[in-house]
Structure formats: C-alpha cells, structure tokens
Image (cartoon, rainbow, N blue to C red; front, side, top):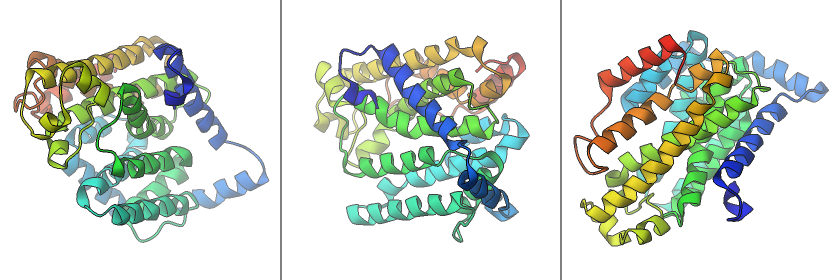
Length: 331
C-alpha cells in the first residue's frame, strides 16, 4: 500500500509502486522448483462439479448483473474462473452487512481464509464457491495472495466506520476490487510478464471500487457506516451525522464529485495503456465499461448519489457498450 510511503510521493509514482507489487506477486505465483511443481500437479487434478459452477453463475446474476454481463462478454475459457472469483468476492463483501457481531464476522473470515488455502491445494470443503475456486486455480494457477488480500481487507473493514482520507479509500479499493481485476488477468490467460496489464488492472480496479462504493452510499448509511473519507467530508462541510441520515445535500454532492473525479483519473490512466496491451488483457479489463457508464450517469444527474435515476441499473446500455468495446478491442 502507498499509504505508508509518505505524502511526498506523487499519485503516478504511487500507482506504479502498487502495480509493481501486484505484478511481482503474479510472477512469484509461477515460481519453479520441485515443491512448486508437485503442488501444481496436485491442484491440476481437481475438477469441480457443474453444480458448483452453476451456483456461482446464479449468485453473480442475482447480486451483480453488471459483472454477470461483463463475464458473458469475456472469452469462454475464462468464464468459469471469472464467475468463481466474482461469487467469492460477493460472498466476502456480504459478511459485514449480514452480522452485527464482530466476532462472528471474524469467524466467517477465518473460515474463508482456511477455505482459500484448501482450495489452492485442490482440497476444497463441501462448498460450491470453494469448489469453483479450486477448479479455477487448477485451470489458471491463481495467485493465492490476491484472494487472501480480499479476505484480509474485508475483515479489517469490519470495524471501520469511515476511511480517514482518500488514500485509505483507494487502498481499500485496490485490495478488493483491484485484487479481483488482477485475478481476472490470470483467468483470461494474460502472461505474468505483461506488467502494463497489471498497472491497467490496478487503475480499473480502483475506479470500479470507487464508483461501486459511491452508488452504495445510501445502503451503507443504513448500516451505520460510509466510505466517503473524513478529509473529503471535512473539505466540503459534510458531517458524518448528515451522511448517515440518508438525506441528499449540496455538501454530499460536492464530496461525491471529488470521489468521482478520482475514479475518472484512474479510468483515464487505465485507458491510456490500451495500445500497449494484448487482446487477452483488454478482454479482462471490460469492467472499465461499467465505470465509464456509471460516471457518465452520475455527471448527468449532478452527482446526486441519492437520486433514483442516477442509481438505475445500466442494463441495455452496458450490453451495447460491451459489444462496442469488444468489436473495437477497447475497454
């Protein structure tokens, strides 16, 4: 994380450092040696059931229709792994909102941490998402560190009522949505040597995380928390009490605009790398289309994140956008 690197570092340098760490993690996952080779042979023997895969598809279709559409636009060989990853991401994201007991939440994350380790060994428990993850790892050799990073970030988030600053917020997005994007590169067969793909995935992941959290502001308020950073709120005269009230205000709109501009910066940085990326990497980065459409709609409605019109599902517009990007090799 760049949070500890100091304020003297520029955002561009910070992004490069984070993405470089992610890239090194992908390279390390492919390490050689007799033990590593035996481990790869063991996990390649695992094959999940069709029931496990269908369960993941159903979860993503019901809980995240936009990811579902993005996965359908991905190469067919990557889809089982992508659905497994996104079902895992959805299940871990639901822990905070599904329990009011801190210790129960920690127990569930401990279970997920152990389950990921077992799935990486090709020995998942009797859980369809775990079995689908094991199958995805058997086929694509997923980096376990990214999966554990998602679990760790969501567990740490159990006690967070509000991030302190924008850097803390973007670090959380990097560790969750960003990790999902890095794993998506692996599912789509992007070579670990393609470092710029990792940089682009970092930017798309952060941008996607930011707009997802913005759209869910009213939902989070109902849970007694917010992802609008304290320093951003302070700059715009916005109190935590007013955010949690669930009421729109000019101050809330101004704060949302600042976060939206941060997401736009990351989206543009990702798209600037497009000429240097392989077709496989571009296919993995299709969730950028979601970010672009959400930002456009928020701008259209003046960043009123409590406006029903601004929060409508993307539906046919996303399908058309994905088809356009797929035809022209963009994202």
